[in-house]
Image (tube, rainbow, N blue to C red; front, side, top):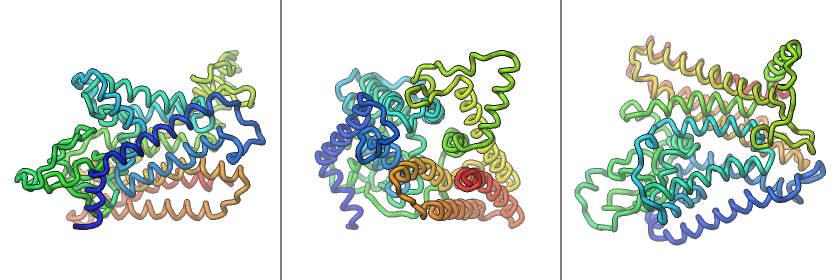
Length: 451
């Protein structure tokens, strides 16, 4: 028995310890989310080491979320199954809820994509990375929704995590790159050989017998060793991407990857630095003034609709909100739509339109790298406020982006194997251009506009 298999079986045996860890995370999450909202806003002299609000901000946006995303690439959805406070609370609530069946509308595959896009957009409007009240509204609101869904539907399960969580789609995409997963031998499962363990409670409602890959599995370990057919194993990081042509795929996965994780997220991370955003705002402001439509220039919106902290000289006007919506939407359509068209063209010149979905998945490494670099920009900003120079950050960013692009290009070349040489090269050229489009956007943020 390999050490990975022993680890997976150990997760099943020590379920009580895992539940204790889950409640410890829930407690820490609640303290860091709620307590800063009752404290005064930090002044210009406050630092992470002496201000709880800034410390919570640093933990949430500087450590928690960047490394949760990184954990998906390294360990699959271990965070979802073992540590996520929303999942733990939703499952706990469902044990005491009504246990209703899942309605058809709730099973719609587009909810994670819609949730991610709306949450990302709304978070920028209320400055979720900078203010505790905004973080409580978005993260706390999501947690409350998870509990309510748990109280309503299917006793003892995580319906919220399976169908509605705004980041579940992102986690599913990144987990495809994980070098470990719980593999299921379907034939051995059917044989029902010993050991005949009690049936596990698969909280995310998966058909364990037919489970393939790491994208949907929450890696909780509850089914490890079941019928001798489930075990934690190592695998190639490329396996699940390269097997995509032989597995069913949802069109929503490609939409989320291209328009959400790549296009919209890039706009959310870069609008504060973009000269194009400033030009858009100035142009619209001049147009409004010329027509005497001054109400859009006022900054009287409530904080839960647009950022409004006049005591810190930080308030968004209605025009600011409009420009943020336009910029993020434009980024989604320009970057995501550009990649969509290029990959459609790649599949077309390859002579197989069904290749679009597998080719879209080849951009997953670059999408994950972009999310990590965008979120870790907050980490870098806060650490520099503390006086750290961090001269190594720019070379590290260049190395990560270069490695991610190289990985994507190699995956694209492999997905096109078996084609006639001319078709393969033309298709790969389209994949190269799509990677270049995304890479150009990140270059502008970290180097082009930084100087």
